[in-house]
Length: 227
Image (cartoon, rainbow, N blue to C red):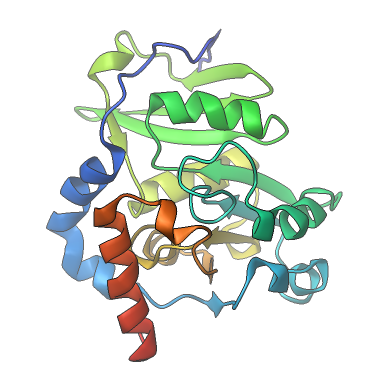
């Protein structure tokens, strides 16, 4: 597919990303509910060790960021995430990508924070799908849209976004796992896409907006009930 290299600033207008995610997910809620159980549930990111990766044949990790690697819209790795994540980032044969429901401003920020891995988003306009990749300060669209401001973001838990990320990494589905803190987005999206899912506790839950804190509490109740 044709590509184009440009900057991230001003490409797509910022929106209340959590509300857009809710609106996009609600029509598919019944399907999402059937895919909420993670493949692995860890008590901390520290349990996701190089030994865990090798034992489970994982060749690539897709990362959620807010609540997984950082506090909400944090500009640095969370204290509880920095050490464990850095050890995984240093593994020579393990590939990584960021898959976030962030808005345009946060997208550019994540590219600066994590320049060594691709930050990926997916959009649609009519029947046309557009992939967007930011890595090392270089942005690529596949294909190049005529007017990015009129595109609609495809958000987790939509499995098309996860499959796009897997294709960008060039790894078979069986070798990929999604790491995230939200069952409704990260875990369900991974499960529906056919990859394994790794649920970790939310980093800095008090830093999230109140609607997301309510969702976190609901997910906590579901887990205590065996969900």
